[in-house]
Length: 537
Image (tube, rainbow, N blue to C red; front, side, top):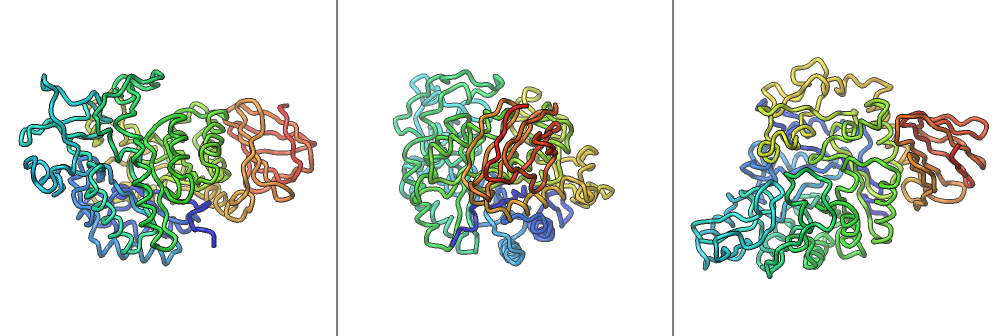
């Protein structure tokens, strides 16, 4: 039987911002459960929850202080069990973020580890002596600014942290750490979870020789505040030992029925696609992986084709997970605004492309509404790197603002209290109840249903067609059931000459007349026919 996650559409919920039912301004599990019909009606196959575990919330839950408990902000384990049951009743699978590479400094493991150098958990984190001059052991940088090392005066050593200093990295070279992490994953599988989204899956291991990284081989296309990107990070992540541990995780999930793991490969460019391939090759590692390759500012046919064909080369038997937005990057409708006729046109184009991609598809909450990035002021920020580097970077708060359900309700119907992040007028305009029959939400429902009903889009192989920018075109499947998928990535209209017995099938923003395909700005079309040919007009 075909696994549920193949060709699935998975909807990401950011729990803090989905629905607040207790009025404290922060979303909760009861609110998620109440609003699940929205996702079921959309046609999604499952949900991914960002972290809900007990945490001091220094990094909004990605700093876990107890892997086996739900944070009181969101509810209780019992309310989580009810959420899973309700989701399953609606035909939705449930996966949850597992933040395994690091914990909070409030975790009992770290509190014990930092006491001295001889306690039972002394080697559970990455500790190292200072250099003779007192400087950090290596030149590694933290993603959130400054060195990836924090000096602890209790132990008289530095500990590693790839993110905040309050997020110490676990030492996966210690077999006891691996066993403890596997046990926490088993705990949640026993409660009925359908899988995991593995945060920073390529960060588990560090170089035991503590070698410093060389400079980046290619100048990073980032702002100078991103010191992490100025190094070729070969010793603090992407270590070969990662693959062995992933095989242990896969062996655990294989003991259960139809469990899925999707790993976040924290890297950019071609390397990220190569790692996606390595981490999903065969049947003993991850079920699928995604990277930031499609989550950046670049929107060209060449780039999207390179991502997909690159994965095909590196993992011909692997499974990709493609998405355009998530909780860490600006929303794509705004990110690609320079190439858009308008917000609605870009939202529809992005949806049409995603639903045509081979693999599993990820949707971030609000994406189905055509939601835009929220412009934040400094006093509204909660994101640590944004606060530290303002105004050099805008941070991640702009994509994390609350879901808007009712245009005329207080805070968009998200909460009866004061929301943790503001709900502003441009976002209220995209509310669920303001969508209408011709809105972006209706289009998403139509496109998802079309994908599910198309053998070509769910099972057909992908073959790209050679057309000039800004046209992305590829064929899914072959023979009579094949579809030729065509997308105009720019705001200017254009035409293509069509040969063969072609006809428009499914949702489209194009017309076909006398062998000429007219694509408006951000236009798209699925052409049915076994012998469809395209040339630039």
